[in-house]
Length: 118
Length: 111
Image (tube, rainbow over all chains, first blue to last red):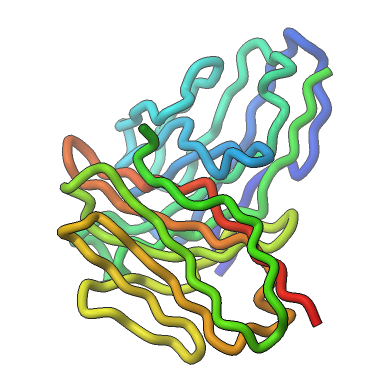
């Protein structure tokens, strides 16, 4: 059972380049989310999804796009990278209330992706 | 105002000390509550869920006060291995489900 798999682990981009951070989970979780973590800022929610075909914005969505075509995958796209997007990105998933067992919607995280934009 | 607020610390305590972390949340419709632990350059991991009746897991005790919208974590007999960042987490289920993190409280336990 792989849990949540994020790729790549490290990436360096130039300003204006585009890229996609991949996230896949094999736990049949309906809820998936992307966070960025900057020093002193904690984890800030970028986008989230409560099921295939459904996505919504978190607190810092600007500059990022997401899609959820399957339950398993939730890629995060940077269309035109900026230095302000230098950060550590975490993907996480969980059951929704009423889904699965009574695991109280505990998030399982990927190992993170460190992105540097020059 | 942030949805989940924590004292960022850092807290510097000697081994064996008792330390308490506090957290407040702004949305009264918040549904479930957790403390996560994050080690340096690692992903967050669940430490414990938090219930209104209070719950204990070994040296760790968590408490929720819904009326005050306040969550606490108490660590007794601190160990060097407790050094980490402790994140207060809230699940909201109004107008859609989402999980919100506090900025975290850094703990250093020294010998």
